[in-house]
Image 1: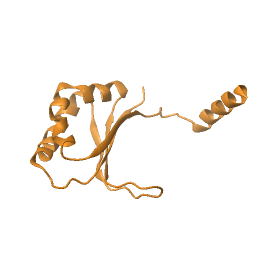
Image 2 (image 1 turned 180 degrees about the horizontal axis):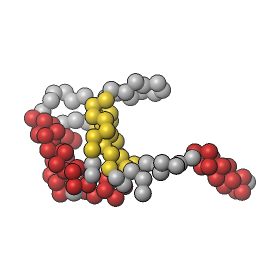
Image 3 (image 1 turned 90 degrees about the vertical axis):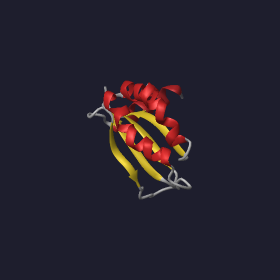
Length: 118
């Protein structure tokens, strides 16, 4: 199974609330049982196309099941509002691709499906 990721864009808060600092102090312990680790934390993107205000957070998990289980875990749910109440953000979970993923094979399959539907 490919790795999975929790990806968030965090918009700058009006002020750094104590709840946010507590969230930061406690989040790692919620991720540990699911193999989660920070890959990017607070990275400012070098935007090449479009508009992307805020910073990026990426947490890696061994697979999608682990990412979903972490997000729904009692430990994470217990602290989630400490972040979400004070920092506007967009957050999603996404599955990665296998190490041998070949996009040209995906393009060929999409071309085949498109051509067979015409």
